[in-house]
Length: 309
Image (cartoon, rainbow, N blue to C red):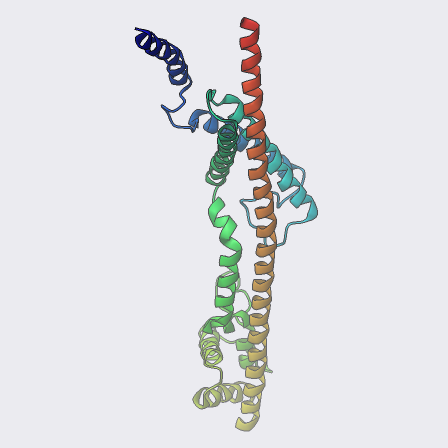
């Protein structure tokens, strides 16, 4: 009889505990409060976007961690990016911790871990939201390395000799500097567009090959001799001189492109490192503020419960 009474007492004591656990969701539901996480992430993303617009309005053209610039981030931009991350992550993490469900009958260490995880998840979701919202964000982050590679490839391409050409006229007709030098006449005779195009194609082809062919050299010398009246030997010397100048111009253009690509690579690396530091700070602050928000929520509930009693 006493054993049955003891069992009944234990069952009666366990029933409220199980009911409370079921009410609080402990052990019966996931430990992740997605509603609180999404709410915090939305607040963090919105605040981050507002601060981004404010920074741009203040003249900080490189304040976005989702936008690449061909110059490294300045001190003001770095400070603003860090402030954006700290403020947005702090607000988002605190809201996620404050709005989460109450975890009763859970060990303190587990509560601490869950709050930290909620803060990190809030930071991750808000970061992904910002990348999705800002147009071309993912492409912009990687554009430094992509553009640097494209610049090197363009500089090394056989058509690099085209860099020696000037811009076309208003009517779109090709008019290159070295082609005009070949066709320049002392009597002021103007070369036709077809002649310019032909000479230009010859020069570009030979520049791509790395040397001028004997047939092209003779043909260009004949054009010079016909238009200027100089001897064939003098015309060939002129062809050699003009081709050497074109080769040097192409090499200079290639070197400038390589230098620009290297500068872009260094700027991208410098900016990426500071972006990494800022985002890492944001993750840390979100985790800490989520713990603070969770503890404040639990403390507020305890106070309300005591006053009710």
